[in-house]
Amino acid sequence: MIKTDFLENIVHQVMQSLPGGDSQLKRDLEKNLHAAMQGVFSSMDLVTREEFEVQSELLARSRTKLEQLEKQIAELEARLKPRSES
Image (cartoon, rainbow, N blue to C red; front, side):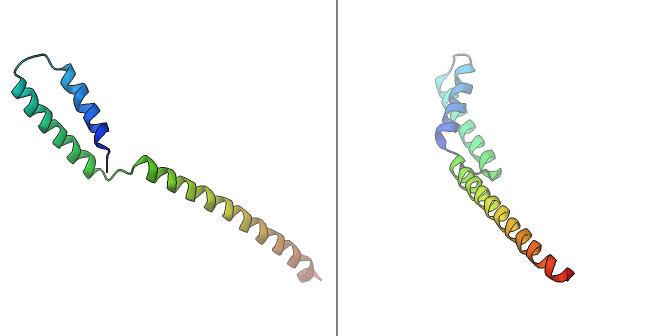
């Protein structure tokens, strides 16, 4: 889920760019804009930075383990090759 402070910041910037006028209209617009943006971001199925970092770390560990396993397989194949050639 998107952090609400991010949405609040965007809504605040939009509201600041509007010319002065009826404050009730601005409040209604702000409320509707916030709800619309929340809906759009929710439907995008985004991940948080924390979730992204965790998955990046898991991927890095998996790559390291895969490289180790590939090296072990290559060493075992090298040991078996001279025996099979005899």
